[in-house]
Image 1 (cartoon, helix red, strand yellow):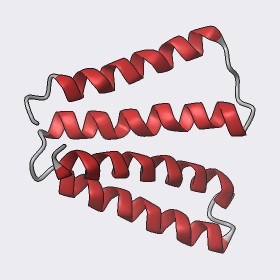
Image 2 (tube, helix red, strand yellow):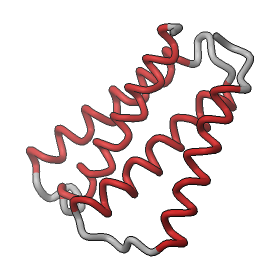
Image 3 (cartoon, one colour):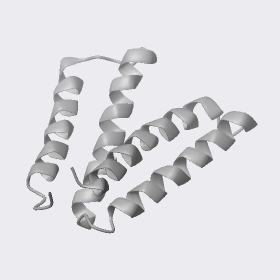
Length: 109
């Protein structure tokens, strides 16, 4: 696996982290959580920019946002008791299918 894909995966994981940080910072009123959230945001962008050195823009950005969106939604269901409707899960599977499709058909190894 190309190091760019590792950077991209880590960037997506960081995106999930900062989304949760936004939730728990309570509008940036909790200083400690807010600082960690901003640091993780910056790390996510740095890792994404490193991945984009070799990966196509559309592929990298699409996968980054897909990992963030799907991962945040799934963890919200698991840890925050968010709705688990069948249609919502189908939609998440569509996002995941799109992310896998972007990886498989990116033309980059």
